[in-house]
Image (tube, one colour):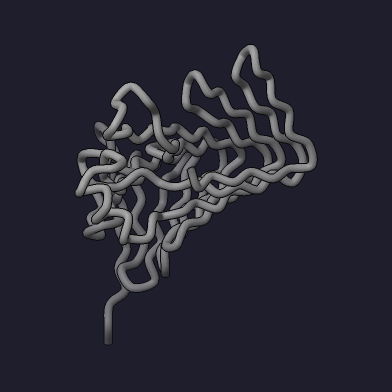
Length: 195
């Protein structure tokens, strides 16, 4: 598909279907569509969806391991992921892929697309004037949702102020934030007041 991978060293292990990339790893992956169902390649809906530009993720890290049988990649050391609207950094990140179905041959598998990303360790998510931090961050492409947990999850917004809780969930499409403070814990939200 539209995936690209560059590195100082790329090793392909054919028998186990594993790819190891090391040193200045740079890659581009397509994100799965946010609707409930993936378009079938060759269908009328797919033709209409092809007119829209796919969301591409530009990824960089020191190492990348891809397991083809599991449709999973692990990025380690100085992980940076950027899309048109978001930027995510973390120590380690696992990317999970789905494959498009091919209309003419349902058994065949099309291009891989990112359906989920799990950042572990020092996760920072930036979107416009918003910045969120936590130990763990999970992004789901289908509903364009981030769930931040671990440590002291905090969402900073230049217009709305600061929100903290045990777990923060925010939806990109409609700017909804759900705060889970846990049993007996307090939720802290600070807002700027116009004078």
